[in-house]
Length: 260
Picture 1 (spheres, rainbow, N blue to C red):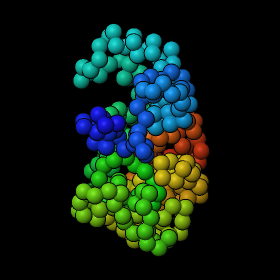
Picture 2 (picture 1 turned 90 degrees about the horizontal axis):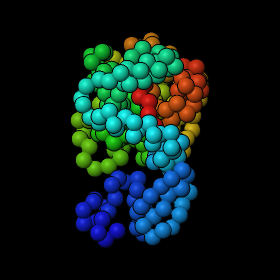
Picture 3 (picture 1 turned 30 degrees about the horizontal axis):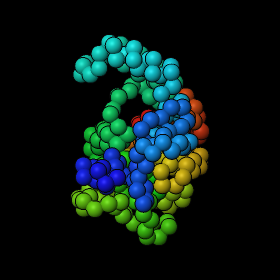
Picture 4 (picture 1 turned 120 degrees about the horizontal axis):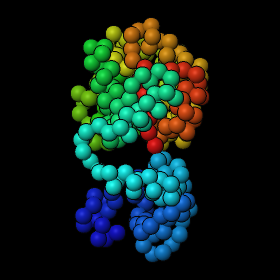
């Protein structure tokens, strides 16, 4: 820990790895278990934040990765494997006519919001209080910090350094309050490019699925007001079914970010 703090902010590669009185430093992982530098063994329920759904270094995955590595690493060009994967995903996910592969969930949400602004010509977006959408400025708002009346939440930044100009372009909606959410959306409709939703509220709310009636109401008001309905399924990915969260509620968004 002392050495790590000399080279890494907080002594860790990311905030999620920080623990008191000091973080765990691992030296290996296999299956559902990890080992730290002191040879302590743990059952890993973190699963890398989601993507290690098959466990650490499963033999079929290692074999496939090794096979691909022998064909090349980063080329900046499109491969047949990329086309095949996009085809497979679009076949299974309702409403996803095309796919774009991105380096991170934060970037995927950011690009979806940018596409919504470009399409609608509007600048603002609405997000749900308690939903998590990554580490970029325009979504690090009203996640784990709740403020204002329950039916009319007030914006709160998750950390220092987020410009007021960014905060002012975000409208916050109350989770699972259909009447209030629809009312707020209608009030700001002419300036809203998108409504952003986590169909299953992960990091901040502990995995609570959005009620089907709530999602349906958001879909309806977005259609009425010409607003792009975006789903953030980075954490849940295909865990809810091959069609993503549509398997859960039967609703189809305009854009969705999927991963892990």
